[in-house]
Amino acid sequence: MIKELEKQIADTRAKLFEKLATLKNKKDILKSTELKSLYDEMKVIPNDHKASYGKLLNDLKNELTEASNEDNAGVDLEPIDVTAPADFNISLKDFPELLSSEKGSKNPITAEIDLLLDIFKTLGFSSIESPEIDNDYNMFSSLNFPEGHPARDDWDTFLTHEKDSKNKPFIAPAHTSTMQHRVLVSERAELEKGKPIAYVIPGRVFRNEDVDARHEHTFYQLEGIYVGKDITVANLLNILKVMFSKYFGKDIELKVQPFYFPFTEPSFELAVSCPFCDKKGCSVCSRSGWIELLGCGMVHPNVLEQAGINPAIYTGFAWGVGINRLVMIKYGIDEIRHFMTGNLEFLEQF
Ligand code: FA5
Image (cartoon, rainbow, N blue to C red):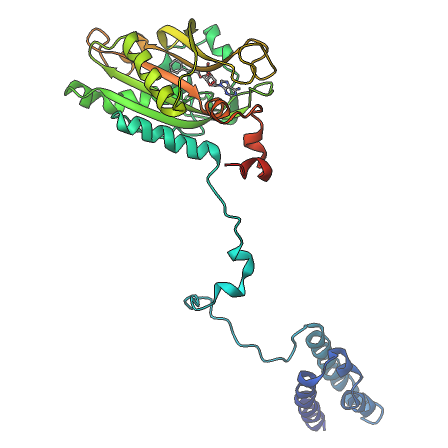
């Protein structure tokens, strides 16, 4: 007898699922007369079959409940072939938002880095980007900061918990000078064949800095390094003059003063007259009338030696310019923090 009951449930099940596919409100299937009459059978079947019949009925009810919970239960959906090629016949007119005149563009920093690299390409410089995580050797030791030297404390670096093979933390580079040693080592052989080393290196740098209108904790620098024979400070100042006149397309007032960096000797700091206040003093130039734009100098003999280059034969210069500040001066932006905010009103001006 249980076989007959099983068949009855199986037949009704098929009908119920057919019906479910046609129902608007899928939950109605649970109140259907077909299901009800299966339950009514319970009253008349012999006691020794009640348990197995009850279980089959319960399973069916659960199945129906689950199917009625799914929005598209029973509806025949066309399967999606995710590997199919895209339909390029779709008309753009169907997507008016794609035809709007608002288009994305390069961030001003990226655009100006491209421009600077183009300028230096015409002057025969190659380029390479600096990494965003580096080690103690490239940040300090290779640049003539001896272990434990107080000059290391002038650089407010961010360190990682992770340690390198020498058990020193990795460093988020505080300047693009971390690339000097790498470039000197990789180009040394060509230098010895008579080809001067001429590189520019753009990169994002990080400092544990108190931020204000002119100081960011994360900003961009463009490093330059040139090494050859008989290179002097005059060559350095000449290259910087060419860079500024090509970049700004006009004359700007420059001030060079002696400075100290462990990796250059002599070292200089270069500032431009503040275009926001005409040297009267404002919040952008910290009331000094000048905006510090770059540090530079003649590559220290110890830095050359550390890279296996003989300082008795070769000399060179290097500089590191703050790109955000260059762009601020070019476009009259009085607040460095605008670059990092992702504020569309600001970015849409470029
Ligand atoms: C340096 O970073 C040296 N590595 C530069 C250098 C390279 C010297 C090669 C000699 C040879 P300094 O800390 O002064 O130097 O930074 C260079 C430039 O980066 C500054 O002149 C300024 O334009 C920019 N800069 C520095 N700190 C910030 C900051 N917090 N926010 C925005 N720009 C900054």
